[in-house]
Image (cartoon, helix red, strand yellow):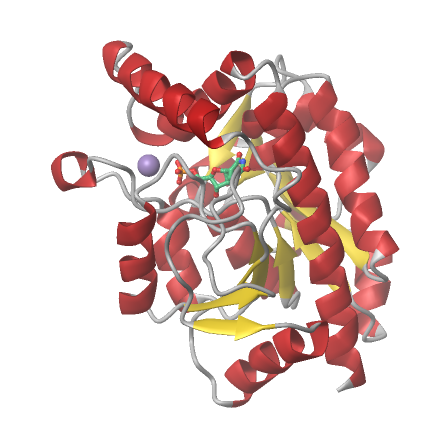
Length: 307
Ligand code: PSU
Ligand code: MN
């Protein structure tokens, strides 16, 4: 079935960039609606787009507004997503049909954003941290829908690893099983989101944007079905203190358990817990790393055009 054009609109600037073969970078919207506090979220959303422009590419933030998929948003649409009163649903791939059918607003996760970006012909995507296998998943089976979408979506995702609230080792094992390529950018250590080093290694490493771009190009050429993850660590100067991180995480998981938080609410709960309990230090780390990732994704997209 063809895409329903009345339900899928590409912003004119993004459309032109795609038609003329310019570099385009997709951005997710869950981080705006469910990952960052209002009103800072809207300002940060604008900054992330600017970071993509600074890297030489056109940003395409993806969301659902009034039941229409939007690839590239206006300032008004970013404001809707950032407003806690707008009733924005957190949308993973499984939620796309229901939210479109209901005609509501949706903020897309890494999973739904990758899917939509690929449909729109966008090959590069920047985010903060991927979802993955939650700690305690052997009992809860809580594993992010991001993993299976990345397994079947040929896109290059620049991120700071997976969120440190997860079971990082188990997530890396699942990424291997699912055929997702994990590459450290300038590092042999898999980044730990708020921390530069998660304590786990990466199977592949690159040190230049040209090398990073080449991997996506060869993945496309051989039609490997999965994503390439370019994992860029936050700098050691910018990372969250380890003792603070571990203490806040342990308290947050206990609090989530006590409050009966489950399913799609776990990640937003823990992110908010971090921001509150670290006096917004985690928020600053999050903002710093996502802007750095947006810029790097743009540079990789530009490098791919030249090769
Ligand atoms: N990383 C962040 N902030 C976020 C998320 C990731 O720094 O808000 C979001 C992403 O949209 C990711 C989602 O896809 O959390 C994963 O949620 P879950 O664990 O419920 O699949
Ligand atoms: Mn989950």
